[in-house]
Length: 288
Image (cartoon, rainbow, N blue to C red; front, side, top):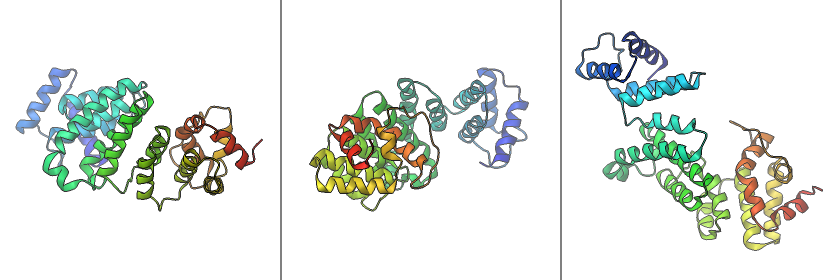
């Protein structure tokens, strides 16, 4: 739905003086029975209206106003995956975010199971209707990891790869890290081989850390580490720094400090969990 339709629709909703859930139910009843006058062309069902409300909520600076719009969206369409995605994304505590994500994923599984899944497995990211579901699965895996359920998080990530082997979401970056932490070398090799052509910073440092974990201070491991350091000179100092990484990044270019920050946000703690890895990194990065 384009911005004009969204604004027209929201204007229409506003003109009906919706103050509470009962008013909203009356609005939906009229919508479903075709009694509404002034409905924008191209807007014909509650799910479209709900999605439009969620889209509008992201543009609001006031969190409570945005949340109210999302709650309205759920009253219009209780199966609006995007609404649960918003609630999870704006939740501070992973345990609470998980509740919203579990609801979204349950809805997605019901919508996309059976024949749909059989026909479209492998192409889920390329389908517009499944993208919110895929984003919720990714967020779910991240939350599981944050609360210490690493094996469960890995399982969700593997499902994401099976739904979209091209991995447009970059799931492999964190999947390989978690496989290192959980000491699952066979799976690491499996997924590393799937993405052997990926030579970005994230993958190069993951491969170096895995080589050290499985081989120790070998010639092969050191060679991989030096290649990774050459790819991005900022990563090693950030890992070795005693300062916490407080910055966040939304985009970066290859070899930049922002790229190094992106990697270290997820990887720094795991490097410290691998015995001897920090001293090995310090020696080869030539940092005192």
